[in-house]
Image (cartoon, rainbow, N blue to C red; front, top):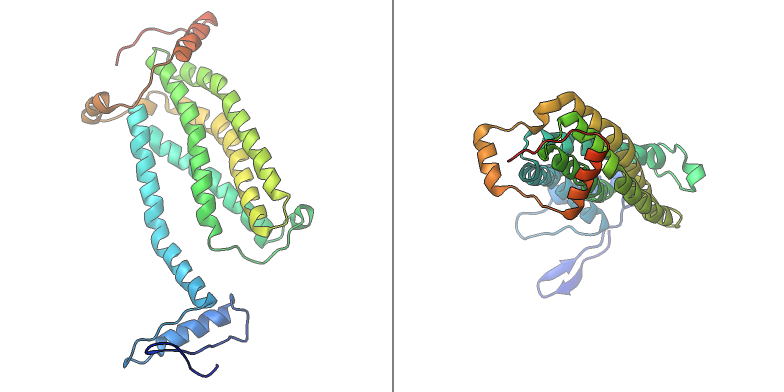
Length: 278
């Protein structure tokens, strides 16, 4: 610990340098001890790299649950307005959670436990940056929801046109799988470019997002979503009567020439479609 020096009118600065790593637990304990032993006669502020890291982690831990709840509630509301179903938004959030889980699992396996670290040319640090899950969650959740909207909007259009649930799911997957796969492939190419860089931060972010996109565009959207919607059948489109009446007024929807073309193609392939009103 150095001597106190004047930092301004009525302000003195005392520098304390930990002997251990500034990002280690010993530095954290030092900051907590200094803050706990502050005199009550005058204000004392503790700052520096270690103190900022502790404060940032505390902010993330305190606000992350509320942020996640807000994102989930907003997602549920907009998907409810789009589909008129209570179950489909909940299913979409659950499926996105699977993609996020795969992404976080890959981060832990590679950058914390060291699986495949040599092949990828990275060094294992035994932990992850506390900012990384926040950024990965925001980006991966948004990408996953894009693919969900692509798929659900097409299935809903077919179902609203009069096609039964199973056929709507089948044809909807057939006509949306290309755009989902193409979009995922383009994103993976972009992420691969970041993964080949030298910065560890970019490698971590690129690998996490690549895993999230690949799992979401293949296992989730092309297998799990169609399977669950086929099993649930009519329950996919269920909503309380009062909510369904309100939905007819506030519904978010669009009409397109392309959709009419797809309906005619479906009829040409023998899929029975009957006209259905809202």
